[in-house]
Image (tube, rainbow, N blue to C red; front, side, top):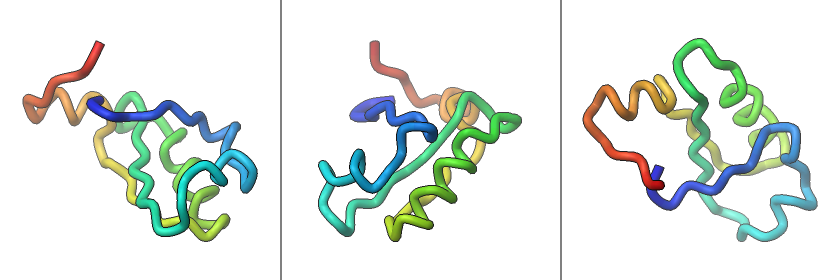
Length: 71
């Protein structure tokens, strides 16, 4: 996705999030609607006091809506 940064849920911690200012909105997504990685990431971010939204449908939904991916 354009501008996306890969941050797997297993790497989310107070230390890794320090590179983004407080108030940064994180949008999490996964491969598709049956993947739960985005949900786990959203919970971790919220527990660390970060703003977060989950993109329902993941990459599959993104492509279904006609949006492009970056190489």
